[in-house]
Image (cartoon, rainbow, N blue to C red; front, side):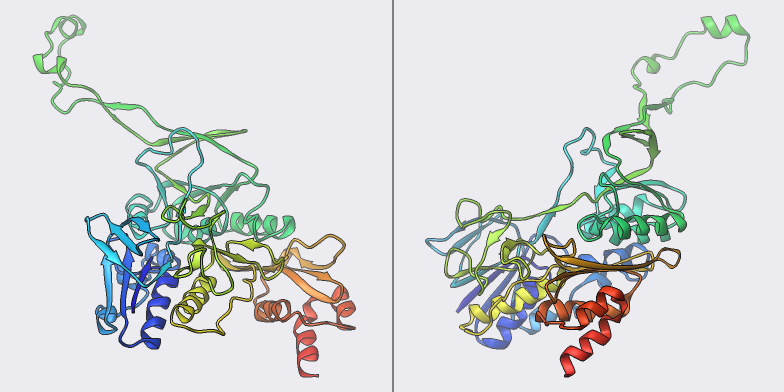
Amino acid sequence: MKHIIIGTGPAGVVAAETLRKRQPEADITLIGGEPEPPYSRMAIPYYLIGKVGEDGTHLRPAAQHFDHLKIHLLRQHVTRLDVATKTLSLDNQQSLSFDKLLLATGSYPTRPPIPGMDLAGVVNCWTLADARKIAAGANKGDEVVLMGAGFIGCIILEALALRGVKLTVVEMEDRMVPRMMDEKSGTLLKKWCEAKGVRVLTSTRVKGVSEEKIFAAPANSAPASSGGFFSRLFKPKPAVMAEAAPTPSGKLIVELDGQAPLKVDLVICATGVRPNIDLAKGILETKHGILVNERLQTSAADIYAAGDVAEGKDFSTGKYSVQAIQPTAVDHGALAAINMTGGHNALNRGTINMNVLDTMGLISSSFGLWQGIDGGESATLEDLNRYKYINLQFQDDYLVGANTLGMTQHIGVLRGLIQSRTRLGAWKQKLMHDPTRIMEAYLARNTG
C-alpha cells in the first residue's frame, strides 16, 4: 500500500505516524514545501523571544525520527494532482503514484489589497522564514506595526513586546480578536494590552504603506571646501558626482484612516489566512476549503483532507466550516489515517469551535456558539478591574456557547458540557444567576 501525505504540519505528521502504526509494511511518503523539518507554527513566538532555538520549533525533536519510522520525507512542492491516474507531479519533474492520498496542505497568509504590501519591510508571521525576518528586523527600540489583532496577531503580540519593540497594533474591527470574543471581552483585552505598554488602535484601517524617502549623500562625494562662499560656488564638481545616484534609505510610513501616519521600522501583517486548496481546485469538490465527509474523505474516494484545509461538519450548527486550529488538525490527522487504512468506526462527529489564547499573560477562550443563537438566553458576570469575564449562551437547558477572559479553571468543563450536550435541568437557572458555578453544574449533571 502506497500512502502519500502532502503537508508537514501537525495533521500531516500525526497522520504519517498513525499510518505507520497501523500498517508497518506500507510505503509512506510525507511531502512538505519548506526547507525545514516539520515544525509547529505555535512555537514561533517562543523562538522570537529566544526561549527556544529553531530546533525547538520542530514537531519531532529527534533528527532521525522519520527515518526510524521509515517515513520518506520529501522537501518539494507538488505542482499537479491527477485523480484519474492517482499521480502527483513535483517541481523537480518527479512523478509519484499513490493508493491513498491525504491533503494536509494547511493555510496561507492573506494580505489586504492596499498599496505597499509588497515592500521588503512588510512581512507575515506564518513560517519559520518569516520569523527569521522578524528576529532580524524587530529589535529593542524599533518601531513596529502589527496589522491585525485576531488570533494570529495576538499569538505573536507578546513575543514582540518582550523583544522590547515600540509596538502599535492596528485592528479594523471594533475590538481585539473579534472572531472569538464579544464586545466586552475584546475591549477588556485591549485595555489589558495598553496597560502593558502596547498601543492598540481598533476601528482603524491601514490605507497604505510607503518608504520614507531619505537620500543619503553618495559615499564618494567630496567634502565641502573650507573656502568662502564664492570658492564653494565656483569650485568644479568631481566628474564622478554626475554619475552617482542618490541612495534612498529610511523607514516605512504607514498611512491610517482617521489617525496620524506612523513612521516604523517593520510592518508585520497578521490579517488572516485562507485554506490552501490550489491543488484541489477544479478536481475535488471545494468551497472555502476541501469538502470532506465524516471519514474525512473528499469527493474522490481514495483522497482525504485534514486540518486547516478540510471543510467538514460543524458540531454546533451542522453546517460545513473550516476549523483552523491545531487540536482539530491533530484529531483530523489521526482519523484520516485510520480511515485510509480500513478503519470503520473513526468518524468525525463534527468539530466544535474552540479557541484558547494567551495574550501577555491574560487567557481568553471561546467555545461553540459563543455569540448566542436566536431565541436563546445568556448569562454574564464580569469584574473589569480584575480583568475577569464569563458569558454563557443557552438553548433551552443546554449550554451551546461560552466566552471567558481571565478564568482558566473552567475551560475544560465548558467544552465538555457543550460537546456532550448535557441537559442542565435546574442548574440552568443557577448558572443564569452565577455563571462561575459551571464546575458545580458539570459535576452535578455528570455524577448523578
